[in-house]
Image (cartoon, rainbow over all chains, first blue to last red; front, side, top):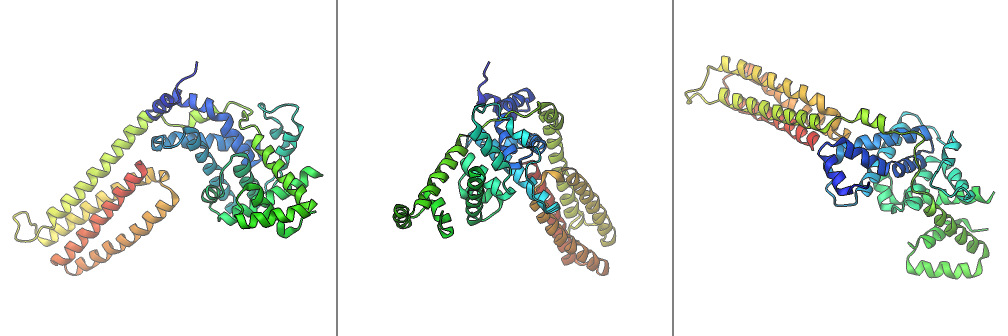
Amino acid sequence: MHSDPTDLIHRAQQGDRAAFEALYRAHAGRVYALCLRLTADAAQAEERTQDAFVRAWERLATYRGESAFSSWLYRLTVNEVLLGRRAERRREQRVVTTDDPAALERPRDADPASGSALDLERAVAALPPGAREVFVLHDVEGYRHQEIAALAGIAVGTSKAQLFRARRLLREALNR
Amino acid sequence: MTYPHMDAKLNEYVDGTLAARNRASVEAHLAECAGCRTAVAELRSLSAAAARLPKSIEPGQDLWPAIAARIRPRATWNVQRVWWRGAVAAAAVLVIALGLYRLLPPSTALYRPAGEGWVAVQADFDRASDELSRILAVERERLRPETVALLERNLAVIDTAIAESRAALARDPASAELRRFFAAAARQKVELLRWAARVAAS
């Protein structure tokens, strides 16, 4: 049985946890995919997914319906991941590449025969974090540079430079 | 092979963000450069492949139980919030009313002797201020770090004004000017704490 999303949102805003769980069920895959591609780490992605939904519950009253709920939720997710990453970067300067490539072989909605998609997922996961984040947001999620710059706290020029760097590294990796 | 200086232009060309004049010059270059034509084809293919990646990936485990354990029931949360807002408002009204009452000028029937009034005002203000600060400490985590920084900066300024007016009043307890100065600083502090309450509750 499918519930009306607007009704679910309204009920969740009133404190209905069952309605919020239904919203979680409807959006968990998309939120997790975003977190996984941004972090390139399955354990971190699960943590960030939890953080995003907890944050969404706390901020639900501020959702006024000006944009689609999914857009609001995914933007909030990106914020959570990027804020977490900035805090982590402050704690220790380290390069994070995927230490769990198998996690990226799990896309259940992907065509199993699609080897090139898998190659691309692995190559994206191996990008330096800054380049990976911009590539995922721009080329996978369709955000514009102005939006990425605002979300990531970087200049538009930096966003473009990271995207071009990511594409160059990906072309090199996929042509090997 | 492509020329390094063409890299940004080719990316912008593929993204459709290149100005018309530059677009014409890139197209002229592409007509002559096989390496750059290959690069453009690869960039287009890469962007198309990225856009086709699955938008949804199910987590390896159900994350709902962990999320459910972390979210507070909204009803309780609202009750707490309403109580907290009420407490802040009540404390603010109390401190302002008592401050005004005790700092009334000598011509008013309610005026108290300077020494007694000043001690009582200080005690009232300290109690209300402590109470507001204690409540705010509980809700502090709901404020953004920038807001906390702004709050602390302003509180520091007001606390300095309060400390200075107290010190001056200790030297000249009968000064109506100093009492007004103290009352204004105390009111500012209460208003600031109320503002923080509204922000935390929004």
